[in-house]
Length: 360
Image (cartoon, rainbow, N blue to C red; front, side, top):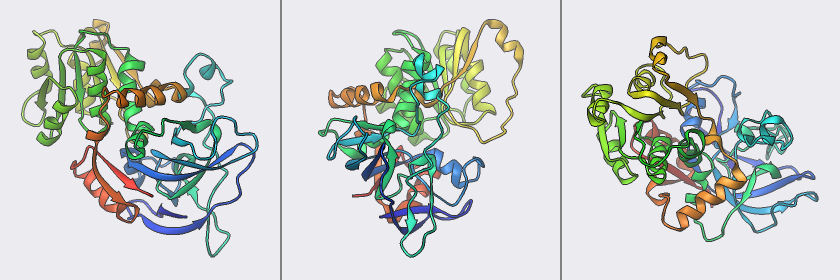
């Protein structure tokens, strides 16, 4: 197998050859066909998540075909098409039992690490997945079988960006029809927040970004109005679009707790809800006027779209198949694994909604 390895912070990824170990009792070997290029991987490259150790095989948004299963695996069979969840869940802890497996404390599986073809040295995998590779070994609890008619490049995106964005609206915030929504950031996650709001029946849906190309793209996903926050005060613009009241909901989908986060709180009306979807660098302080909250506003976080992968992944893909979820439009560019660094350049420059690595 071959894989893209990050050896050091701010260094280009390198393609290496590896050999996978034999699978264990509860493991699944997956031949990866596609992997999304996610901003979370970029956080690791930039050193903004120091809890992720390097070197490591990056990638956590993958889809492929089951090649081999361990003796106790009972949820998939050889030949199944699958999407991988990057968050394990034990099924027994309090969070799992009350319906929030995304908040389970089960750590990433440290097993199944590939080794170099010419030595016994092993290589770590980001989130226990390492989907920037042609194969991976993972525990069965994160392997979600899907309809074989779904294209795997599109299906891969459900494993992180789509689930995170749409889930923040439908699961975390439970936005109701007719409620107003503002979305700060129109990247891969923000566009899915926008289409989640459209699916929920929100009106209006106001997209905020500093790039006109991203704002134009947001209209395809359901934005009814756009605001370029590099040109106007977004809080004032949003209030003007909502009769001076502000929106019922605001979503911060960038990961910046400076101006966008504060603006996402200020732009909501009394008893409004701000949902923090983006992932900030470690040890980022939050600073805003606490008196804002006297208007009974709520600020909440959304982790992985409050998802239940075995329920939500097939549901989202069924919506795609029915023409009610846009995935084709998200795939801006497809790169071979050898051009993974070019994919990150496009991401960092805001040129794409989502790039996908072709691993077949």
